[in-house]
Image (cartoon, rainbow, N blue to C red):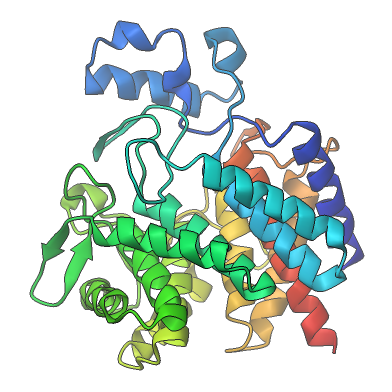
Length: 386
């Protein structure tokens, strides 16, 4: 536990010294080379992947600067709130509230309700996501932090932001399926992805718990019907049902499980309990090595990715009430990650490859997620000791 506390202290110092800014894996289109892609999705992806996959940091050479991150700020705010719950140190609460005020001011432009997106252009197999265009993933995860603050402080303004985020989620299109409907990943087209659909459902269900809004609950249940209906017989989920999305990875599985557990906890709907148990069994049995090293995919370890480590820690702690050994595994993963992926300067490296350590500091994808994960772990360990 002392190792984790020291690690978190060093990480917090790095984050605050760098004013909550940093690089991200997919920020390559912030380069001055972006105009030469001439609107070609293929060329945009080439540039983005060149920056992302390079084992050396090309960003300073290509004019990519450390940026703000709404999702990063949300994760850090969550970490501060968890630190406050553990220590009762008002400084942590003040820092969390400053982050939430910043997020309130920096919601995505162009939408009346609260929603959040990237501070850079993004191109992928699923298409383009313009700069600042919100996604249901970012909006749901950040919205949950506003609910955390509401629970902790009782301040109605945080609940109002959460309700606003739910209104944005409800405005998204939905794909009809034989069972349920899938809420779209983005607002400008239908994009059906399991983790985003389930995260949106979790946000709606948890906000329903405080508002009694039946529409929230109805849409949340329909979303869970969709994703649980497509759960594979062994408990896994593909990233999405389109053929191009047929992979199974660590941190998206963690998102799915945390979201489904949240839905069950706040909806009192037990119809998907067996899906949760089967999914968690798959997660625990397929994504960890004996040493505590987290695997990226269900069938291979590399790349060893900091997002997989952080999400694994968080999910395992969240499921410690199911089996107390999950907390022990979370600690084992955290200790392995601190020993093998934390830089002496305090930040966590992006990835470990078979013959290369990629030591680039990513702000959301690494620092913010590890800040929340380690804070979650310390609170869980403290509760276990009592």
